[in-house]
Length: 62
Image 1 (cartoon, rainbow, N blue to C red):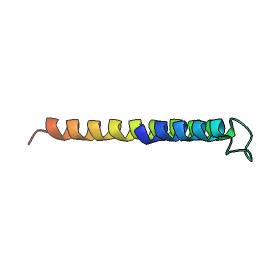
Image 2 (cartoon, rainbow, N blue to C red; image 1 turned 90 degrees about the horizontal axis):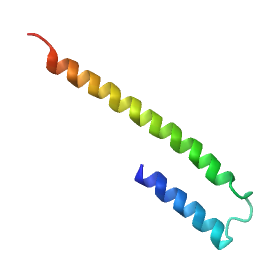
Image 3 (cartoon, helix red, strand yellow; image 1 turned 90 degrees about the vertical axis):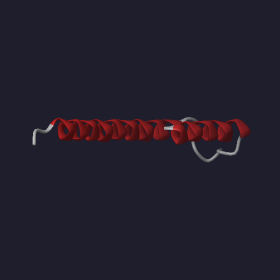
């Protein structure tokens, strides 16, 4: 998640420096924001499933 925030900062730096003149302003930010939201959702789902699996394994009767 830290890397995603760093990419936001780099994209903002590109636009402030005037380097990203080929891409309409904001298109990179919107695209990266959507991708970042999908990655965060996937991460949350994976950690939720792992937590459920670990808790169910700890609660098993032998």
